[in-house]
Length: 129
Image 1 (cartoon, rainbow, N blue to C red):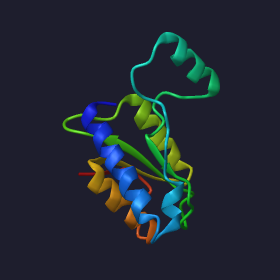
Image 2: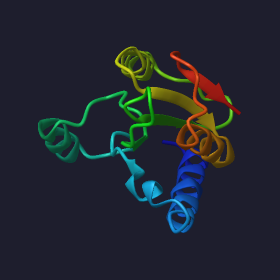
Image 3: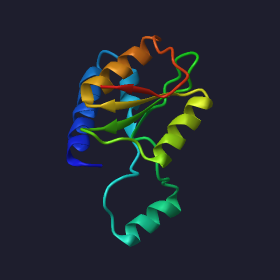
Image 4: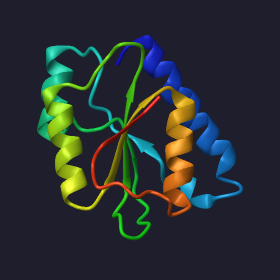
């Protein structure tokens, strides 16, 4: 994860922590530690524990009919998803999850709010800028 993506993700989870007072479902938003530079030893331990390349950055495991949960892949600038990320997002969407690629924390916040209001109406991976 590059620095701009990191800052956006930090801003998003900070917003979610504050906003969870009004909507406790936001307390369930969590990160998936699947990116970043690591030593070979740490990378090996994480793989052994089940970390998978391409798994989206954030998960909100709250079902909002007809979806089983919301998965968010954070991006910044001209970055695009990798083939592994595309596989994860497309497969999760096929299995009934809402999935979105967000360029910045505000689009991610908007995606979460739309999802929690039950206004998500896409069976494909959306991109929000």
